[in-house]
Image 1 (cartoon, rainbow, N blue to C red):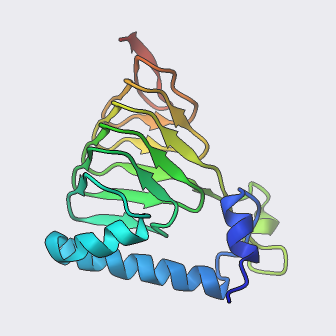
Image 2 (cartoon, rainbow, N blue to C red; image 1 turned 90 degrees about the vertical axis):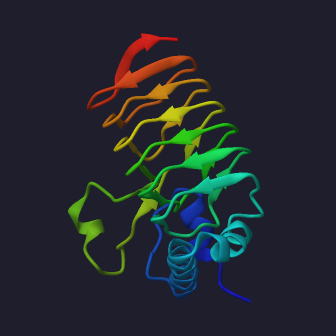
Length: 184
């Protein structure tokens, strides 16, 4: 049995040690699965699906990178274009019928603002904040979804947007930082 202390802290959004042996082994397993999937999606799909909790009816164009896969949940009919990067230290939950453009980053991982906590040592660590994306969302290419963000259903994130705050339902957002540019 593994010591799940750091895992539990990680998914709870608390400061945790990313170099914990159990977390390191989970990352290595996920990274290897992503490499296999990127080489041959048909061969790697079953492993990817299993590590993602049995997700169904999704397709991610290679190249795809995910830190853990165990915290990445996609709904039915999810599609992501090439270059998707998901840092899932906390849950990334994506609804049904979501489309993601190329080179999109979805990040839950973040680091303390206090430089002392970013230096290796007894108090060192990182933490995360979950990301939630509703149903029928379209995220344009090169968008960045930052830690702790919720994107409402039926919303559109414009290409190149940097989403730093929650997005309500039925809007289009764009810019850096992203702001509402249109009600849908």
